[in-house]
Image (cartoon, rainbow, N blue to C red; front, side):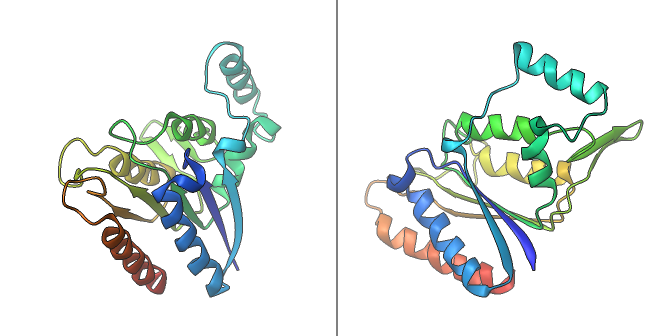
Length: 196
């Protein structure tokens, strides 16, 4: 059975359209019986961004080779997942800062990647990273959409083989039918689960 890590950064919680899509995806994945699922709701985690003494402690632990310190639990959890689902709304051209804080905490040299004279190399055992998001406007084919592009690059950085972005956009566009757009996303999720 594969390990699946679900990372929820839907800061509006149950009011979030992204959360509705992510919940639909997770129900479908759970129903396959193929995954041991672990969920991480970032809004409930004691995440701290890297600065001051918190940053210095991290650097000291890494210099001492103490990668089993509880400080690196998020990184180990991420690195050991076979499939990772990240749910976050389109926010300020990317995603909420809370998710970036989490990413800072999982980006650990010697756990999720390593660096040498030839560059950086991923160490995660993940085979697939799935990013679920919704957008009020139409941004997919513009330079303004940075969330999915960032997540795809992150997958490469961590050594994850495949990347998918499941999204609905234009949900707040004048004349658009948000319910119909969400139904299209659910149909895309159905197709993706069948191919996963």
